[in-house]
Structures are given as structure tokens and as C-alpha cells.
Length: 266
Image (cartoon, rainbow, N blue to C red; front, side, top):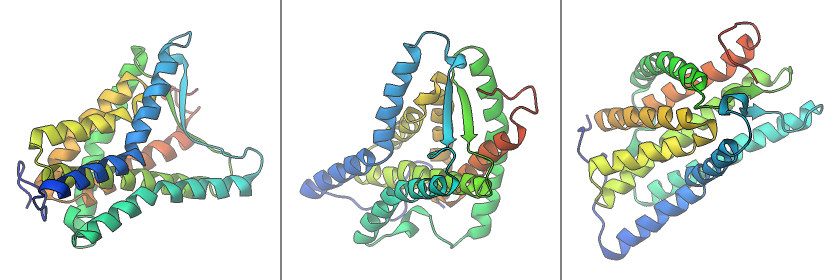
């Protein structure tokens, strides 16, 4: 079991040039993935707060149609987007394999499937209920945009694509922002608290397009996920939890939007 303050299992010290290489490698991985998303979200947030009207009167749409009125082309674009978003994860797998570790080093494997599923479901149940209440509160206070989890046409592939999108989000975020980033920061000599801060702030940053509430809520979630990763030494449960949360948000919105009064719509 991973210590709460110890290094990630299988990490190794690096010196001199190797330290610089790992630092540059980490910056490049983030620049190709969620670090770039954080900058994009910041620009989007600036645009939202400088736009006339309140934040809650603006919408942040997540899964939108890429080719309205052309369902087969739309499907092709949806699948292309999901596949290309996973390329940085493939890069991380390559880098971990090159150091002789692989995904096993961060607990993204099939060694403990029932633990991953059970623990992930429990985490999702706790975070999901509090997350909905937090979102509704901060939006009502004017600190958040109206989040529209999906705006896909009513076609046969809608729900499968939403599930695939949820899986893609969870794999990219938990593998890169938790497993890979913490491993590299441990190898670079960062303290556990500094690593926790970097990972959680990064998670919050690429949700800033949703507003202040999106930033704070996801940063807190990042703290919880880092704590659990340090305790369990596995990203598997976190991927399961994140997938369930996103499936609940995407599919739940598709089913309930316009049918219940408490769910805000654009």
C-alpha cells in the first residue's frame, strides 16, 4: 500500500542531465495535453467575465455536434476527437515503458479489478452528490457558467459516444495529472505537498472555462484524488470514479434536461 507521503511505487532518483530531461519531458507532455487545456480555459474564462451579462447567463457546452445535420460525418468527427485526445496517454505509456516501468507503476492495469471498480464506485457516489449541490450553488451565486454536458443530436450513436467521451476524459486526466505527473515530480525531488498543489491546481485550471466554481470544485476533487492515489498507489479506482461521474453528468443531462426544474439548461 502506498504511503500517504512517500514517493510513487517504482520511482527512482535522477541526477544532473537526467533530471533536466525529465523536467523537459514533463513540460512537453503537459504542453501537448492538459497544460495547453489550462491555458485555453483561462483565455475562455477571461472572455466570459469580460462579456456583458452574468456568468450564469452564458453556457459552456461540452459534447456538441461537430457536423449538424450530417450524422455520419458527425460520428466520424466525434470518434476522431476521442481517439486523438488519447494520444498523450499513449505517449506517457511509451515514456514509462522506456524507463522500464509501464502503466503498472502507476496502477493502471488489471491486477486489482474488483478493488478498482468497488473503490471507484464509492468515490463517485460521494463526490457526485456533493458536486451537483456545489455546482447549483455557485451558479445561483453567479460564479459559474451554465454547464451543458451534451448537445448531440438524437441519433443512435449518441449515448455510446457520450460513454466513450467520459472514458476518454477520465483516462487522460487521471493518467496524466495524477499518475504520471506525481511520479515525475517525485523523481524531481518535489515535496508531497508541492506535488499535491501542482496536480490539483492543474486540474482546476483546465476547468476554468466553466467559471470560478468549476476551478474550485475540480481543484478540491484533485486534492482528494491525489490523497487517494498516495494511499492506494493506483489510478485505476480514480479512472473508474471519474468515468462514472462523467457518464452520470453526460447521460443524466441528456435524459433529464427540460424535464426537471432543478437542472439548469442553456
